[in-house]
Length: 471
Image 1 (cartoon, rainbow, N blue to C red):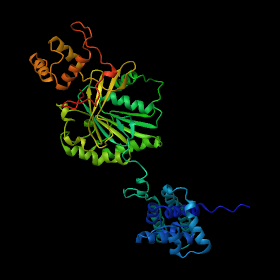
Image 2 (tube, rainbow, N blue to C red; image 1 turned 90 degrees about the horizontal axis):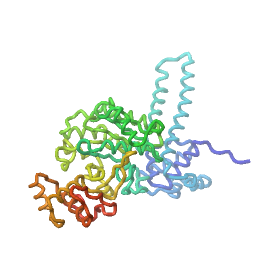
Image 3 (cartoon, rainbow, N blue to C red; image 1 turned 180 degrees about the vertical axis):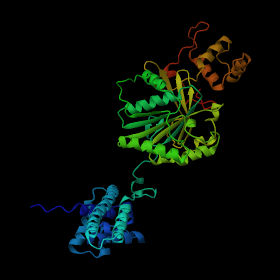
Image 4 (spheres, one colour; image 1 turned 45 degrees about the horizontal axis):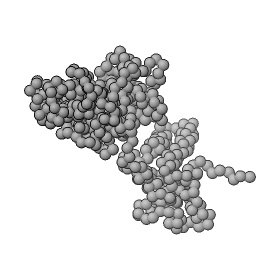
């Protein structure tokens, strides 16, 4: 006849002790978060006490040292040496700790219930008689509910098992997993359209993502038009795109706004517990109440909302407008970029848009990303590179001004200014290269230059001008 399996509490305690005897980080967790009362029997309590004493003294903890510490002999000594084999993985030590606390409270709750029933039925029942039992039960409930490693300290048990410098993307090369992003551009350039395309693609894709989109600007008709242009319709499952149109959340740079945002996000996460959460805030200036030009506004946003997003591991992006000079960054305070991990500037190109990296905490974020825009359905398609917006028009203008193909950029800029058609240096450089690449192609006056072939697009490794644009 097979021997009877030990009770669950005994098995769990053996596994927790086995983790402590095989892993130093697990030993620290077990000794710091379990009490003798969590152990079902005496020999387990003696081993726990030995682990706690040796941990406090900084002594090595293993089967031999612990067996010697408790003076174990015979069957008890053999049992100690089998404990590591009873622990499938030291990485599970937190679940063992939680289960032991829960089992302890279940037993105490049952005993307290019996005690309170006995007192209430007795002739000497008074409120004072039951207060000690209730207080003890409340203390146990608080103890069981206390999170393991709730201090926020790094968990050394898992810290070294992960490559912290590896590139992790939710949307390739654009949205880094668990990171905060700022994306800014001039008005009507397409930043909202690009981000809606990204969010809808994630929400309908095969990977387990759910996207929350807080839209402070568009109407329902605008959203419908854009989604239909992208090929979505009544038959599309958009259940993982949680779209909040003109949300009524309190300002996100206030405690009330943070609580409202977290309640909303936690509710979505509860609906999709196995999915990674992605948040888009469009546009951030409408989601805060502080002055846009004040650094305090963006510090408050981070202290109240941004830090909660980071704690939850959410991937998030906030959309913003650029200032009068796009090269100088987002509109308002320079402190806007201090609390995010990546800052993207979206600019127009000849065939679509380009994201230019203005800041990144991670070395693996690309310097720029080019996207071509196609219609019917609307798509943003990744390109190897693209020409700055206005390149073809400037090339035609240089033709009409009879500029030689070997004109230098300063002379070209001067002649364009004299003709009343000033251009930025990056556009002039691109137009010069375009003219040279198509040289020899017959063309009539006024014809648009040919579109650059994919293999002829600028490469970021070929060189850049003063603005960091390839030429």
